[in-house]
Length: 430
Image (cartoon, rainbow, N blue to C red; front, side, top):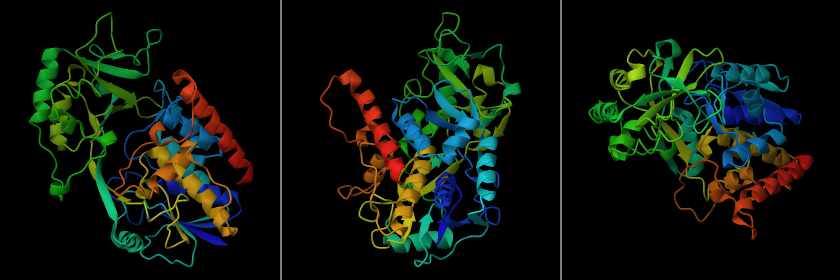
């Protein structure tokens, strides 16, 4: 039996890897480099368009639990992330180039995976398929997916932070420190501002020029990737309680009024990501605004922040808890287009969709993950028939379902221990 996977992003690469492990032959369709969206910069698989951070690696954080569940099930994405980890405090950040190249090599060198570099313009429902086309899906394939969904596509806008050269940062003004870390220098470069400097910075943001969005009348943002200029427009203090919060970043006994944090973006320590500063300001405005920060007066931006439209399916009543189209059972979906949000969540959905497809090919999906695991909770959330309009969200304990009557402080520990045992048991059967 041969299976088709459309898209070699995080979800598609993970799905293809999991299917190949079970001895299934995979035709993996990836349209790069034949056709490439402007948001992509390389021809590698699993390219990280936005941040290079996979967020918290704390086991008692929802996304940290999801990562560990994926490790238990031999996730290719997590192998790559652990191999190409770079310092980022309690977060798991990766060297984006090494991360993607490793995944590309693992996929291309797998004898069970046949990589086909061409655009898919039609779906053949006689072939078991996982659509992992990604949130930038467009054109003929987008039209084909609309047919499956009855045109129930939704969308939101996503934004990317600028990346700057380390050598252009003024270290007479900046200092290393991770939030609340008093003992070690820390993994983040912090660029402090006084009250007066922040007011000048804030004024520059408010008056900065934005790049026009085509369907501006229906401009929607995912809250986790809100452009920093939109946060600023919500009020003077919004940034101070958000990405520029100075709490825990005292230096020489002094707490700055505001801080711009930079996180390492590559292993050789030459490039840094401006944390939380995803934007769709014009390139000139981005440079003008960042140069209002004293430590960034001479900053050199090597990749400007950009804005792109993310597409996803209004999954409830269209997709079931196995990431399978209810009315088209030979077709599965994974990644952000399914309604999950985030790098790790996308890869996790690809892993679980592949596990479900393997069982489906054997005649019955007998083993599944419930909402007492983070991976299962995501699948159940995006397929919840009681939701009229799906709002994409990151992994969180709010969608987790497990009865608990003990002390409040022990609740997450109980959740995590239960979830990991459930995933280990699931792994024995799939």
